Image (tube, rainbow over all chains, first blue to last red; front, side, top):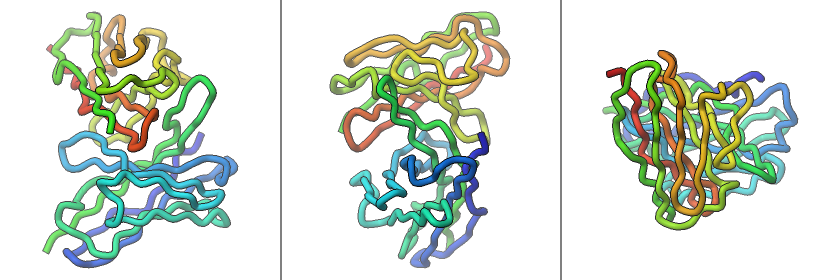
Length: 121
Length: 108
């Protein structure tokens, strides 16, 4: 299957806003949750939260709640991750992934290639 | 929050050897909600195992998962050159979903 297509690398200054995107294709986008995962330089994976594109219901990791906003537009099969005021500590690769929920197992099957966000003055 | 602790942090092995990776949860996790991923440098992770023991599509049978409750294991029966990577366990049983800190399997 075609991986999720993420928007390109971004460079911003602290305090600036940013929205990155993640587009699905080849499947019924509203039928699958989309999740976001952060990977800081040289570090492990951190789950940020997920969104149900069908009704835009979100579930955030409390570590990220209030600092990022997840949204989705099912008419264009795209999920978004938004910051209103970036910090240097937001420098990371951000992955989106599709969530599979089966009676015998849940997992992230399709992944985007990641969006590198660099925040520096 | 459920904390997943992976051990060892780094595993130094030769091709052809067996790799055993551990993932211990701070609370019991239903098997349905435990997955393993492989990540190679400059690549997105890919799922290997879901539901603790089910191989994902296209994953070779040298990869196997086992365990229940708080203790889970990923076994690579005979390491191939392409298996040297970082491996993460993940749980979906309780929000926030969490990942282990990763085990790096490196060439000895």
